[in-house]
Image 1 (cartoon, one colour):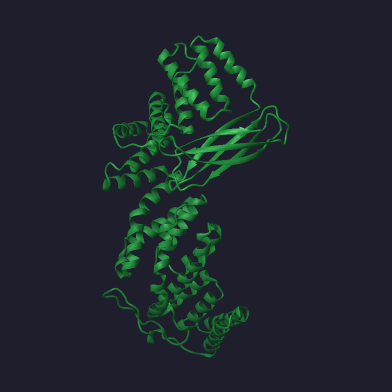
Image 2 (cartoon, one colour):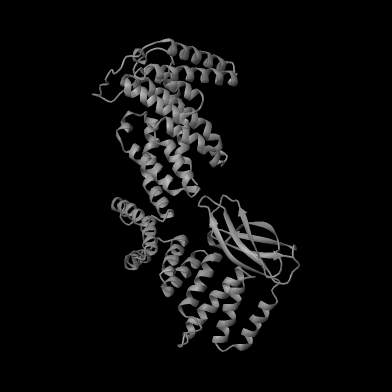
Length: 489
C-alpha cells in the first residue's frame, strides 16, 4: 500500500499549526478573523451570554490547560470533565446560548471525544455563525494534532492503530482531504471497500473544489498530485469491492482524458471479463495485443483475461510472450502450459496436432525445471509423451511422480513494483514422518533472467497426504520477474 500522497502533507503541517490555535475564552467575534472566500458574509446570530455555568466552564478549561502545560494529564482530564459538566448545565438552563455549546465542545476536545465535540461545536456555529471564524481554526488544529499522532503508526506499517486517530480527525474537521485519502487507502487494504470508496470520493471532490484556491502553494502541490491519482485509486477500489459497473464507468471516464493508456485499457478489459462482457473485452484485448510496447506483466494480465474467457489458444500465446520477456517467470510458464493443455485436452476425440503437443511438452518441461516438485507438471508430461506415442518416457514420468517425497502446489508470487516479492504455496507430505522439516531455497530473478538473490524458508510437514501452507518473503530493491526453488531435506 502506498501512503506517499497522504504523508506528503507532513511537510506542510507547520503552515497551519501555528495559525490554528484559538483561545477558549471570550467571544470569538472579537478575534482576528481568518481568510474567508470573497463575498461571504456571516450572520451574527445569537449573542453569547455569560452566566454562572459558562464562567465555571471557562475557569475549568483554563485549569485544564494549565495542568496540560505541566504534563499532568490526569488533573487536566478532571478539569475538562468539570468544564463539560458546567457547560452542559448551562445548555440546560439556556439552550439558545452559543457560549455554553462552545465551551462544551472545547471540553469534549480536551477529553478526546471528537464526535461529541463536532456535534456540540456545530450547534454553537448554528446559533452564532460568527463563531465559525474561530471554530474553523480550532477544528483544524485538532485535525493537525490527530494527523500528527497517527503518522508514526503509518510510518511503522501499523495501519489499524492509526485508524482511530484518522477517524477522530475526520469527525472534528472535514475541510482537508488528506485524512480521507489515508483512511481510504487503509480501509481498502483491510477490505473495507465501501468505506474506502466513500472517503476517496469525498477527498476527490475536495481537491477539485473551491477550497483549492484558498490553500498555500505547497499544499496545492500535494492536492494536485492527489487530484491526478485519486480517480484510478477509486476505480481500483471499486474493482476490489466487486462494484464492477461503477468501476467500469470510472475507467471509461479516465480513458476519455487518456485515450490509449495501457494500464487503464488493460484494467477495463479485465473488468469486462469479470462482468462477462466478452465481446467488449475481446475488442480491448485485440487492441492491446496489437501494441508494440507491452511488457511481461502486460502480457501476463492479458493472458489471465483470455484464459478466464476460455480463449485458451490466444491465452497460450500471451503467456508464451510473457515467458519470452521473463524466461524464469514460473507463474507464466505454468499458465502457458495449462492454456495449451486446456485448449487441447487429452479427452478430445480429435487428437491435437503434433506441433501443439511438442509445444505442450516444451512448456511443461520449463514448468518442471522451475517447479521440480509439482505433480501436475509431471502428470501433463506423462500424458503428453503418451499422446505422442512415447510410452517409455510416459512410464518414466509416472515413476518420478511415485518417487516424490513431497509435492508442491498453488505457488504464486506477488511482486512489489518497487522490488522484492512474496511467494505463497503449499507442500503436501507424501511419505515423510509427520513433523519433519524441509528447507525451501528460493532463487529470484530479474531482467533477462539474471539471479538477484535467494531466500530460505523452513516448513514443518503435516501428516502424510496432508498439506501445509507456507509463505516466503524476499526483500530486494530490484524488481522480481521470476523464481524457482530447490528443497533441502
